[in-house]
Image (tube, rainbow, N blue to C red; front, side, top):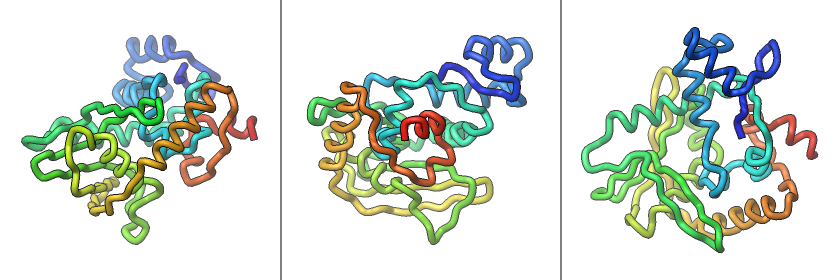
Length: 227
Protein backbone atom coordinates (compact mmCIF):
# COMPACT_ATOMS: atom_id res chain seq x y z
CA UNK A 1 0.00 0.00 0.00
CA UNK A 2 1.12 3.57 -0.63
CA UNK A 3 2.98 4.96 2.38
CA UNK A 4 4.80 7.91 0.84
CA UNK A 5 7.21 8.86 -1.93
CA UNK A 6 10.91 8.57 -2.64
CA UNK A 7 12.77 11.75 -3.60
CA UNK A 8 16.42 12.50 -4.30
CA UNK A 9 16.77 13.22 -0.57
CA UNK A 10 15.19 9.96 0.58
CA UNK A 11 11.76 8.76 1.62
CA UNK A 12 8.90 10.93 2.88
CA UNK A 13 5.78 9.46 4.43
CA UNK A 14 2.31 10.63 3.42
CA UNK A 15 1.96 12.93 6.41
CA UNK A 16 5.18 14.73 5.46
CA UNK A 17 4.02 14.94 1.84
CA UNK A 18 0.65 16.41 2.83
CA UNK A 19 2.25 18.89 5.24
CA UNK A 20 4.51 20.14 2.44
CA UNK A 21 1.55 20.45 0.09
CA UNK A 22 -0.50 22.39 2.64
CA UNK A 23 2.38 24.74 3.41
CA UNK A 24 3.68 25.43 -0.09
CA UNK A 25 1.33 23.76 -2.59
CA UNK A 26 4.31 21.80 -3.92
CA UNK A 27 6.14 18.54 -3.25
CA UNK A 28 9.26 17.33 -5.05
CA UNK A 29 8.64 19.66 -8.00
CA UNK A 30 4.97 18.71 -8.45
CA UNK A 31 1.94 20.83 -7.58
CA UNK A 32 -0.85 19.92 -5.17
CA UNK A 33 -3.41 18.55 -7.72
CA UNK A 34 -0.85 16.29 -9.38
CA UNK A 35 0.46 14.79 -6.12
CA UNK A 36 -3.00 14.30 -4.65
CA UNK A 37 -4.25 12.78 -7.90
CA UNK A 38 -1.45 10.22 -7.82
CA UNK A 39 -2.08 9.46 -4.14
CA UNK A 40 -5.78 8.88 -4.82
CA UNK A 41 -5.01 6.55 -7.71
CA UNK A 42 -2.54 4.53 -5.63
CA UNK A 43 -4.64 4.41 -2.46
CA UNK A 44 -7.41 1.90 -3.02
CA UNK A 45 -9.37 -0.87 -1.37
CA UNK A 46 -7.25 -4.03 -1.10
CA UNK A 47 -9.91 -6.22 0.51
CA UNK A 48 -11.39 -7.14 -2.87
CA UNK A 49 -9.95 -8.13 -6.23
CA UNK A 50 -10.10 -5.34 -8.80
CA UNK A 51 -10.55 -5.79 -12.54
CA UNK A 52 -7.14 -4.20 -13.09
CA UNK A 53 -5.60 -6.74 -10.69
CA UNK A 54 -6.72 -9.56 -12.96
CA UNK A 55 -5.36 -8.11 -16.20
CA UNK A 56 -2.13 -6.91 -14.60
CA UNK A 57 0.76 -9.12 -13.53
CA UNK A 58 -0.52 -11.15 -10.56
CA UNK A 59 2.82 -10.78 -8.80
CA UNK A 60 2.43 -7.01 -9.01
CA UNK A 61 -1.16 -7.22 -7.70
CA UNK A 62 0.02 -9.37 -4.79
CA UNK A 63 3.03 -7.22 -3.90
CA UNK A 64 0.94 -4.03 -4.02
CA UNK A 65 -1.12 -5.46 -1.17
CA UNK A 66 1.69 -6.55 1.14
CA UNK A 67 4.37 -3.93 0.45
CA UNK A 68 4.83 -0.46 1.95
CA UNK A 69 5.18 1.55 -1.24
CA UNK A 70 7.40 4.62 -1.65
CA UNK A 71 7.49 5.17 -5.42
CA UNK A 72 8.90 8.25 -7.09
CA UNK A 73 6.40 10.78 -8.40
CA UNK A 74 8.21 10.84 -11.73
CA UNK A 75 7.61 7.13 -12.20
CA UNK A 76 3.96 7.41 -11.17
CA UNK A 77 3.07 10.45 -13.28
CA UNK A 78 1.27 8.23 -15.79
CA UNK A 79 -1.38 7.62 -13.11
CA UNK A 80 -2.20 11.32 -12.99
CA UNK A 81 -2.45 11.37 -16.76
CA UNK A 82 -5.02 8.59 -16.51
CA UNK A 83 -6.88 10.41 -13.74
CA UNK A 84 -7.34 13.41 -16.06
CA UNK A 85 -9.17 11.28 -18.60
CA UNK A 86 -11.44 9.76 -15.96
CA UNK A 87 -12.21 13.19 -14.54
CA UNK A 88 -13.10 14.45 -18.00
CA UNK A 89 -15.55 11.58 -18.50
CA UNK A 90 -17.18 12.24 -15.12
CA UNK A 91 -17.42 16.02 -15.57
CA UNK A 92 -18.88 15.81 -19.08
CA UNK A 93 -21.25 12.91 -18.51
CA UNK A 94 -23.32 11.97 -21.52
CA UNK A 95 -27.09 12.11 -20.87
CA UNK A 96 -28.53 8.76 -19.73
CA UNK A 97 -25.08 7.29 -19.19
CA UNK A 98 -23.39 5.93 -16.06
CA UNK A 99 -19.81 6.99 -15.33
CA UNK A 100 -17.38 5.49 -12.81
CA UNK A 101 -20.13 3.51 -11.04
CA UNK A 102 -18.77 0.75 -8.80
CA UNK A 103 -19.95 -2.78 -9.55
CA UNK A 104 -19.08 -6.07 -7.87
CA UNK A 105 -19.64 -9.72 -8.66
CA UNK A 106 -18.78 -12.92 -6.85
CA UNK A 107 -16.94 -15.73 -8.60
CA UNK A 108 -15.75 -18.91 -6.89
CA UNK A 109 -16.04 -17.23 -3.49
CA UNK A 110 -14.03 -14.15 -4.53
CA UNK A 111 -15.52 -10.65 -4.90
CA UNK A 112 -14.37 -8.84 -8.03
CA UNK A 113 -14.94 -5.07 -8.16
CA UNK A 114 -14.48 -2.40 -10.80
CA UNK A 115 -15.66 0.95 -12.14
CA UNK A 116 -16.32 1.00 -15.90
CA UNK A 117 -15.56 4.43 -17.30
CA UNK A 118 -18.89 4.79 -19.11
CA UNK A 119 -21.99 2.69 -19.72
CA UNK A 120 -24.80 3.79 -22.02
CA UNK A 121 -27.62 1.38 -21.10
CA UNK A 122 -30.11 2.42 -23.79
CA UNK A 123 -27.50 1.70 -26.50
CA UNK A 124 -26.07 -1.31 -24.64
CA UNK A 125 -22.58 0.15 -24.93
CA UNK A 126 -19.59 0.21 -22.57
CA UNK A 127 -16.55 2.47 -22.96
CA UNK A 128 -13.07 2.38 -21.44
CA UNK A 129 -10.79 5.41 -21.78
CA UNK A 130 -7.02 5.00 -21.91
CA UNK A 131 -4.27 7.62 -21.85
CA UNK A 132 -0.96 6.88 -23.50
CA UNK A 133 2.27 8.68 -24.28
CA UNK A 134 1.77 8.14 -28.01
CA UNK A 135 -0.98 6.55 -30.09
CA UNK A 136 0.28 4.12 -32.73
CA UNK A 137 -2.79 3.07 -34.68
CA UNK A 138 -1.40 -0.17 -36.07
CA UNK A 139 -0.60 -1.38 -32.54
CA UNK A 140 -4.07 -0.77 -31.09
CA UNK A 141 -5.47 -2.12 -28.88
CA UNK A 142 -2.56 -2.18 -26.45
CA UNK A 143 -1.76 -4.99 -24.04
CA UNK A 144 -4.65 -6.54 -22.15
CA UNK A 145 -7.10 -3.72 -22.85
CA UNK A 146 -9.49 -5.85 -24.92
CA UNK A 147 -9.69 -8.42 -22.14
CA UNK A 148 -10.09 -5.71 -19.50
CA UNK A 149 -13.09 -4.10 -21.17
CA UNK A 150 -14.62 -7.56 -21.61
CA UNK A 151 -14.21 -8.17 -17.88
CA UNK A 152 -16.10 -4.93 -17.25
CA UNK A 153 -18.86 -6.30 -19.46
CA UNK A 154 -18.88 -9.51 -17.42
CA UNK A 155 -18.95 -7.46 -14.22
CA UNK A 156 -22.05 -5.47 -15.16
CA UNK A 157 -23.82 -8.37 -16.90
CA UNK A 158 -26.20 -9.08 -13.98
CA UNK A 159 -27.44 -5.48 -14.24
CA UNK A 160 -27.08 -4.38 -17.87
CA UNK A 161 -26.92 -6.13 -21.21
CA UNK A 162 -23.91 -4.86 -23.14
CA UNK A 163 -23.65 -5.62 -26.86
CA UNK A 164 -20.86 -3.25 -27.91
CA UNK A 165 -17.48 -2.49 -26.33
CA UNK A 166 -15.27 0.51 -27.13
CA UNK A 167 -11.73 1.54 -26.24
CA UNK A 168 -10.91 5.24 -26.51
CA UNK A 169 -7.21 6.17 -26.50
CA UNK A 170 -5.95 9.70 -25.80
CA UNK A 171 -2.50 11.24 -26.03
CA UNK A 172 -1.48 14.89 -25.99
CA UNK A 173 -2.24 15.42 -29.68
CA UNK A 174 -5.10 13.13 -30.67
CA UNK A 175 -7.59 10.43 -29.76
CA UNK A 176 -8.43 7.13 -31.40
CA UNK A 177 -11.46 4.93 -30.81
CA UNK A 178 -12.11 1.34 -31.74
CA UNK A 179 -14.78 -1.25 -31.15
CA UNK A 180 -13.47 -4.53 -29.79
CA UNK A 181 -15.01 -8.00 -30.03
CA UNK A 182 -16.98 -9.53 -27.19
CA UNK A 183 -15.20 -12.46 -25.53
CA UNK A 184 -16.17 -15.01 -22.90
CA UNK A 185 -13.91 -14.16 -19.96
CA UNK A 186 -15.56 -15.94 -17.03
CA UNK A 187 -13.05 -18.81 -16.98
CA UNK A 188 -10.17 -16.31 -17.15
CA UNK A 189 -11.65 -14.22 -14.33
CA UNK A 190 -12.26 -17.28 -12.15
CA UNK A 191 -8.75 -18.64 -12.63
CA UNK A 192 -6.99 -15.32 -12.03
CA UNK A 193 -9.15 -14.37 -9.03
CA UNK A 194 -8.64 -17.79 -7.45
CA UNK A 195 -4.86 -17.60 -8.00
CA UNK A 196 -4.54 -14.13 -6.44
CA UNK A 197 -6.79 -14.97 -3.51
CA UNK A 198 -4.85 -18.19 -2.94
CA UNK A 199 -1.56 -16.32 -2.94
CA UNK A 200 -2.87 -13.88 -0.36
CA UNK A 201 -4.02 -16.72 1.86
CA UNK A 202 -0.83 -18.77 1.61
CA UNK A 203 1.75 -15.98 1.39
CA UNK A 204 3.13 -17.53 -1.80
CA UNK A 205 4.36 -14.93 -4.29
CA UNK A 206 2.78 -15.51 -7.73
CA UNK A 207 4.92 -16.09 -10.79
CA UNK A 208 6.04 -12.87 -12.49
CA UNK A 209 4.44 -12.01 -15.84
CA UNK A 210 6.91 -9.68 -17.59
CA UNK A 211 5.42 -7.15 -20.03
CA UNK A 212 5.64 -3.50 -21.05
CA UNK A 213 3.97 -2.65 -17.73
CA UNK A 214 7.24 -3.45 -15.95
CA UNK A 215 8.51 -0.01 -17.03
CA UNK A 216 5.76 1.62 -14.94
CA UNK A 217 5.61 -0.81 -12.02
CA UNK A 218 5.84 0.56 -8.49
CA UNK A 219 7.02 -2.77 -7.01
CA UNK A 220 9.93 -3.50 -9.36
CA UNK A 221 12.50 -3.80 -6.56
CA UNK A 222 10.30 -6.13 -4.53
CA UNK A 223 9.57 -8.21 -7.63
CA UNK A 224 13.26 -8.69 -8.38
CA UNK A 225 13.92 -9.56 -4.74
CA UNK A 226 11.43 -12.42 -5.07
CA UNK A 227 12.74 -13.66 -8.42
